[in-house]
Image 1 (tube, rainbow, N blue to C red):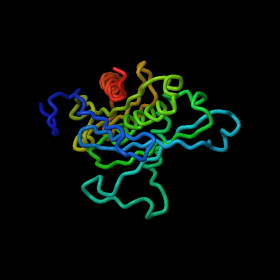
Image 2 (tube, rainbow, N blue to C red; image 1 turned 90 degrees about the vertical axis):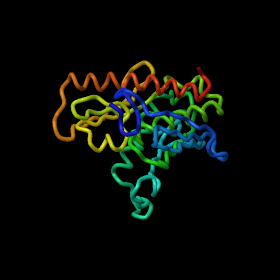
Image 3 (cartoon, rainbow, N blue to C red; image 1 turned 30 degrees about the vertical axis):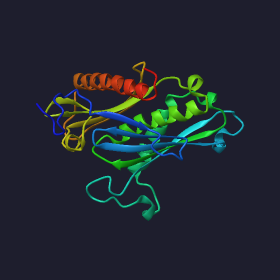
Image 4 (cartoon, rainbow, N blue to C red; image 1 turned 135 degrees about the vertical axis):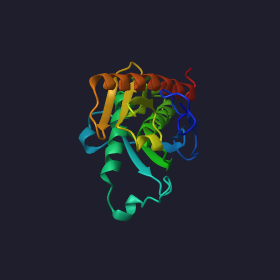
Length: 237
């Protein structure tokens, strides 16, 4: 059965592309495309750390996330107009930051902060998972420039959405699938197959342990392919 975007299998990822050095002025920048979802991820290095890390010699990684006004069919009002971030925005950028920090030995990057800005250019489902994947490639790129990549990267990470529609498991949901899903999950894992974050919600009916196992298994296979794509983009395979 063909999916709305032309994929022929339920366990098939959308086309994944990483376009590095997308912005010339940035230390490291990546345009990540997962199907029609496109996110610009940019890494900036600051030679300072948050107050709670001063004097420790440890570095910090944080993230900021936003959706451009016309990243969706209906214009989104800039959050700067309201003077505060929406709860969804705060939750997503904290997720991105946690995921990226899980991949890095913060003591090895020294007393500096790396900020990963993730700006959604076009949203078609999975913007947070695309941000994590593109954000990691941007982070690895700037660490390479600092000659810190080899010593500081503990493990590659990847993220993908997975869900249940009509009692069947679907990998990497686009927007049309996401809005109809009975279960929607976002899973972040490292290359050793260990979990960094699992976010799962049943929209109407609860799901079983067997279904949960199938969701995790499908996501794990997809994340392996995503990590391989990250390594190819960085010239490591």
